[in-house]
Amino acid sequence: MTTPLADRLASLGLHATSQGLSDLIARATKARWGATELLEHLADEEQKERGRRSLERRLSRSRLGRFKPMADYDWGWPRKIDREAVESALRLDFLEGARNVVIVAPQGLGKTMIAQNIAHQAVLKGHSALFVTASQLLLDLGAQDTSRALDRRLRHYTSLLVIDEMGYLAYDARNADLLFQVVARRYEQRSLVMTTNLAFSDWPTIFPNAACATALIDRVIHHADVLAIEGESYRRREAEEAATTRKVKSKR
Image (cartoon, rainbow, N blue to C red):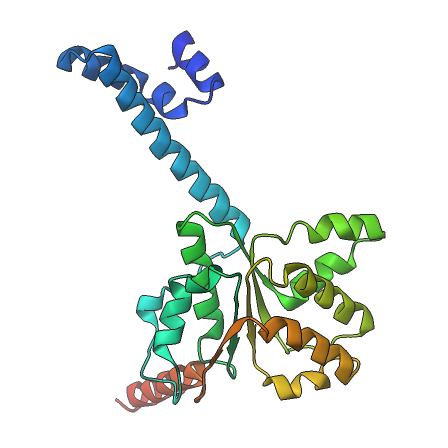
């Protein structure tokens, strides 16, 4: 049951103090804290609580959902992977200088997992991040019915932006223009993380024309760390192992 004092503290934004008021009073009385000690403790607890709330908000806004941590990544499975470069991206080294990270790999080699972990590390380090598939991004932007609404919505994508699954769909002129606007607004200003299953030489196949693809590629990779991963699908391996296990069990 809250007290009038606890309610007043909560209204002032002192949530940690409000929620633990009875314990704080008892502790301060028992330890015979002076005013300075009491205020220092209050400041410490409020700082921790605000940090926790800020982290929760950033995690919620990131749209990350559930994902596998890098501790589960099988570094030995890909035929080719620059582990040092991937770990540099996970340390967020690219943020200094507003560099981009582009992860190029076939399906099933963990590029989405790596991108999600990069976004998560950014959130943990106090940055805002947003994880979105290319189709989700374009659906959102394409729904804006006026230039003013589009401009306002584009400002929503100002944090560390992670665009997943570039290259899985073909883009018409309208979507190509929207993608270009997103990339151009961030160019040399804010970092972008992108995953794609296509080599850059194949991008013209998903855009209306080669000039459009070239303009987009130039701005994405001008200041970028390109992480290329090669090998067979890890998901396919898991499916084959599961099938083998079922066969063995059925013969027993």
